[in-house]
Image 1: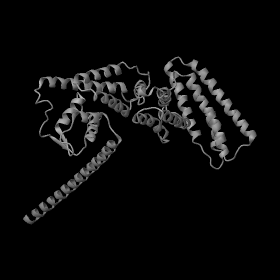
Image 2 (image 1 turned 135 degrees about the vertical axis):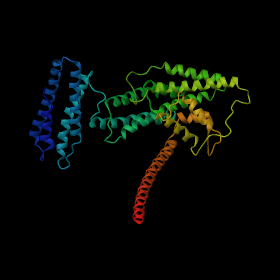
Image 3 (image 1 turned 180 degrees about the horizontal axis):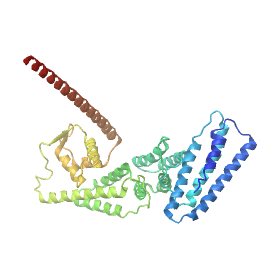
Length: 415
């Protein structure tokens, strides 16, 4: 099986990459003709070669190998820049256009075998970054005329801004770009919804699109808790949480969509939190019914732990321990409640279990920064332990050497 991109690569090297003079008009036209002829020949070859494969897996591998080769070549051409002969850069753009056309051809003609998890070409990333700038402007402009929650808007715009500001070394896949396009298309209508329903409609739309970032899940949890806080009785709170659990479970997700492909769905994260919250309130309701009135709300007089963390920082610290599987509770809500009952801080002798649970699920940027500083301090402390180990090891060897020396000296005196 021959490699048909070789002639196109050699043509680019000869006429652009290794060229030290600008071709005249006639030569340029000849080169442009060669580029177009090679592009059409490659298309024809790929169409014909499809019918030579008996195994579908080998056909898929064949298509994806050419896809990867074209992306590599596209990146090389896109990043070419001759400052001394800028006319060669214009010629390179013709090569890039031909390669881009071939990639679109493979994507459309071999859709079934096109690898969406392959990184996009740098040229495509550059185009999409410009397009995402337009997306953010359009979303911000539309949102300014509605009552959309600023925090929710910030969470949405962050996804586009992260892509816009991404360094050249950070790779994005076709799947991620498709998600950004779909996200903007779906949200465009949501911001035009009536003011009183705008936030809920956007939350539902993001859930449908599996917008499974930690910030979004925390925001949705905060949205539910704000409604629960307005209900006084435990029975009514349980009914409200049960309704939310039923609603979210029955929400259909758009197939194949995920903001973070390696994370569990936003739906699953919310259902897990709701189940924990319902379980906690059910147990609380049972204990309230069984305990005498004087015992309800009882707290250990002498907490076992004292920390200089704030309640927000303590909530984030527990979340880190659970997410990193250092702590593996059967029920996260019970874990948070137990820690709340056993712990006191410099500023709060009594930690509200409800408050600690809220900060466990809802994390702000200031608390993240504080925790980062504390983790850096812990790393520095570990380095000190290493220095102490080196000191004691060295001291031990020196002591051992002195012992041997004096032993030999005493033996000599005795002799």
